[in-house]
Length: 258
Ligand code: ZN
Image (cartoon, rainbow, N blue to C red):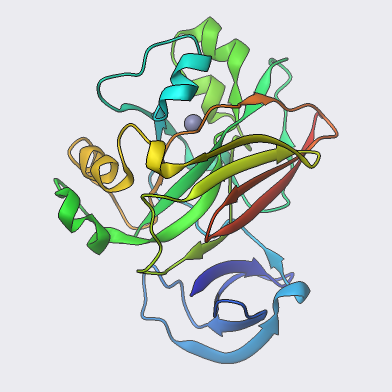
């Protein structure tokens, strides 16, 4: 099952699609906060504008250097524990929304990532219990201004600016999804940039969610982006960047400079 959030020109709505289907069963309420209850309306996927499938109420938690090859390409060693950072919810955009390059950066990179959507208030959760607090998974692009990252010595501006967190196109709710071995890839203007599997994460997904829950209380709608494989590179105005996660889908965004 896939959960979508969409606009029909009016206020945001929620819907579910069965795998392989293009028929969206519209829901009465936000499935994060209410039982899944159809409104009786059906719409076609091609007739609606998908929004980011969730706007985190409190936080997007990011993880630095969670693939050894990416740590090396950034000129560092693989860390011995997950390096965490936060992106504000104002950085979140949806599928096909433009990534707007900030005026103060000349070196913005894409980072393809698997994203975890949290469904329950949670603290100090052990890895074997994390499936109970996860709603599902989506694709994320951890857009990063490398020049600001180097200049500031920490990552708030570099990774937190408006439009720096495209997510979508939907949340996949599938207990059979093997998140410990999914291919994560990106392309720019159709040319592949990144491709690796989550099997190569230094800290795998369940251990990562557990580790993060021992730092922050997690709230429904919070997002965890799980780190990017090697192959990051620049995006410039006019580019079109895609992030694909196996078993989930493709998140596509144009890039522009205002
Ligand atoms: Zn990242």
